[in-house]
Structure formats: C-alpha cells, structure tokens
Amino acid sequence: MRSQRGAGRGVRRKAAGLAAVALAASLGLSACGGDDAAAGDGTFTVGHSEPDHLLPANTTSSYSFDVITELFDNLMTLSKDGKAVPLAADSVTSDDQKVWTVKVKAGQKFHNGEPVTAQSFADSWNYAAYGPNAMGANSYFSYIKGYGELNPEDEDAKPKADKLSGLEVVDQNTLKVTLNDPFSQFPLLLTYPAYAPMPKAGLKDPKAFDDHPIGNGPYKMDGNWERNKQVKLVAFPGYTGARKPKNKGVTWKSYASADTAYTDLRAGRIDVLQTIPSAKVPEAKRLLGDKFLARKMSTTDYLGFPLFDKRFDNPDLRKAISMAIDRQGINKAVYNGDFFPADSLIPSIIPGHRDNACGELCTYNPAKAKELYAKSGGFKGTLELYFSNSQPTYAQWMRIVANSLRDNLGIKDIQFRQVPASDYFSMLSDHGEKGPYRQNWEADYPSPQNYLEGMWGLDNRMGWESKEFTELIAKANKTADQQQAMAVYNQAEDVAIREMPMIPLWTWAGQGGRSKNVDNVTITPYSTGLIATDVTVK
Image (cartoon, rainbow, N blue to C red):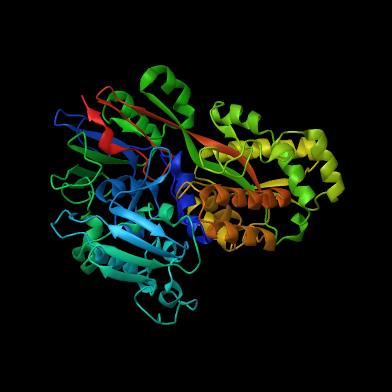
C-alpha cells in the first residue's frame, strides 16, 4: 500500500504523510467483509488501507487519495510520464511565475448538478487555507498571497482575514492567483488532491461531505463511506471530462494489514492490490506470473542527522557513516534485491535526477569511510538510531547499519530507539531525536523542488542551515524555463551532497498484483496511483 505525501515547503507538513509511508508495507490485516471481486456487474475491487478523510483538503494520506482522485478532477493532472497537463482547466499560465491565470473549462458539473466554476475553486481553497478550519492539508496553500493573514503564528490569535488576498475571481471561468513568491512549479502543485473543488453543499456541511463527497470527477459515491469496510464508487453518467471510465465502478475495500489483503488477492476476493508485503514478493512473483505488477516508485529512504547536536557537526563524520553503509547488501538482505540503491538525493523517476550525482559518498567503501571517520575526530558517546515500529523492515536494516558502523568505523556503543508510529514524526518535528533517524519522502508532485526544498529547505528536521542552498532554491523557483530550473535545482542538490546533513539510502520498488478478472491495470508512482478509469473488467 502506498505512502502518503506532504508538502514541499515545510518539512513539518510532511509528518502525517511519512506516518502513512511507515505504515504502508506493514499492513497485514483482516478483511472487512464484502462480496467476491468482479461479480459480473462491470465493477472491480481494490484492497488498500482505510482512508482518514475524504474531504480533499483534510488529508495527506495516499489511501484517501486513492478515492479522492477518482471523485474529483483537479485543474491539472499528471500524465503517465509525470508532466502536469490540464484536466478541469483549459490552461494555467503566467508571465512572471508569480501571478497565474487559470482558465476553468466551461460546462463541468458536480455530481449534484451544481456548475463547476472559478468561484468553486476559490471558495474551496479559501476554506482549506483558513486556519480555524484545521484542514490537514492547510499548509499546502502557503504559496498563495494572504496565507499568513489566515494563519497567524500565534495559534490563539484571531486571523486577520478569512479569504486569501491572492485569489481573484475574474469571471465565471477565470481565476487569477497571486503567489507570495515566483514559483515555476505551481502547475505541478495544482495536481495535488487538496486543490480539488468543492460544491456549496460541501462547504456548508463539511462533516456530512466527508461521509459522502460530491465531486466533479469520473466516479460518484454509491452510498456513504462505510468506515473500516469500504468505499463504493460508480461511474458518473454526467461526466464530461477527459477520464471517462472503461468500467462501471470501483470499490475500495479497507484492510488493516497487507498480508490478508494479499491472501484475498490470491483467492480472487479483490482484483487489485497496489503493494504486496515484501516478505510475500518472491511467492507473488511465482504465483501471479504476468499478473504481478512491478513499477518504479518515488519513495526514497534517508538517514538524517540531528545537527542541533554538536557531535554531528563535522561533514566528514556524516560522509563516513554514508560510505560505511552497504546499500546493495541491505537491498538484497531485506528487499529481495528489488529496491534501488540511491545514487542521488532525487529518485530516478523525478525530472532532474542525475545518475551517480552522489558519487563515492553514496558508494560502500569501508576503507575510505574509516579515513574520513578518523579525520573527523570520531564520535563520542552512545550512537542512538531512531526508527518507527510501523514496519519490520526498518528494524531489519537498522540492525545491519549498526553492524556496519561497528565493524567499519569502530563505533561500539550503539542503541536502537524504536518509537511508536503515532509519536515518531511529532518527535522529529520537536527535535526530540538524539541520533541518526530514518526518514522517507514520496513525491507530492514530480519535481526536484519537492524533495530538495521539502527535506533540506527551511524548517528541515536536521536543523541544517545553508544560505547558498536557500538562494539556489529560490532562484530555481523563479526560473520559467524548466530545463534551466532543473540545472539550478541540481546546483542546490550539490550543496546538500557536499554537506551531507541527510544520507540517501534507496528508492522503493512498487510491487502489486491483479486478479484474472481485470486487465489494463496501470499503477503510477505519483499521486494518481492506480488509474482506475483505465481498468477493464472481464
């Protein structure tokens, strides 16, 4: 099961997403009832984890995105190769990367018949951005002018406004958006589910809307969300957009763990499972054959350093630890050799990735690691390694890392700190860790900015500060030409590699499966996930 995303600017907003990432492969549950899959009515069933919310702006969970993406058409969507293309919009344009003109396609309707207009988007974004509404994806709107007035730093203070000053409804189908700063990646940001439109009924009664969302997408709800059981969607007959379903509907069936979901896939009780548990992958490859669905992903694991602890100040120490880790060995021992050892801060499917950008610093070299360790002056005291308890593979590879540091660097006093998933990311946000910690990131949208600014930028969890890095990110964000922007993002990446406040480890592999009852199953590595509309039912 997929992870969840977080926003690119402030690392704190990623915490909920990372909790879902941590949960992703540990799911092994028991089914929650329901009929056999593909029952002959043209619909199919997908196994996944229970969503937290279905109101688009109130979640950063990919399990919620599974459903939301089918119920709503955003202004922009991602093509299969990860480019931002219009969906509910005719166009999204800017001359200066700061003021954007959005043209909304005329004639679109919500599932209740209400027209989809520029005002629909403005009202939804204002609701999401208004601090007192406490939407889970609130901070994704921080790019838009006026966000600060809706979200005072003093949480007890009353907001100075309830609408974003950067939103202007020019006419029924035109929305003018002014950002705080030039941001060339804005069309990609508009693919994020939080930017979906809501009808007036949703804004009037958000609680009821969470149980029964009314979207503008290719599917509509079939009854209410049956919590901890399933969400049933059927094709919306009034849909006029570009994603017309090739089936009659999809049921998202909730599981508490992936082992039982995998068992149900094998038994034909569900038709699609997006992530098969790592321990079951060898068996799944053998039993499913061409129904085993392998794909690259954007989720990358890292080992971060708490630089607010002076013991980790020296970059040579951090580089020594990186070079003492046998990424390929861990990949084979823990992930069946299916993951991809990191050679960059950015995964290979993201534009701007450069092969071997990390060079020798991400290559296992015990002798060179020992030299750098000695040059750094070594490490004093207990080395504590932090990870959550949500997935058994985290403890497995942390044990291997610890053994490597003992054998290759001579660090003998190493202790594990396994933290409950529910507490892990709040601990990191509060700088509660006293040693290297596991972190991962999955793309909110496929841009190097999302990784670099989200993980290494201002408010990063490491406490790392680099004026050079910050200025390069700002320069890239202002650069309209995407190739030129990529080159500047790469310069920023080089700064982070040189300092190595966080070590890239490996990128996940997607390993799913389908039943014999369905075909044309495509699972993207982006927020679109499973392209449900393309699935055909036999």
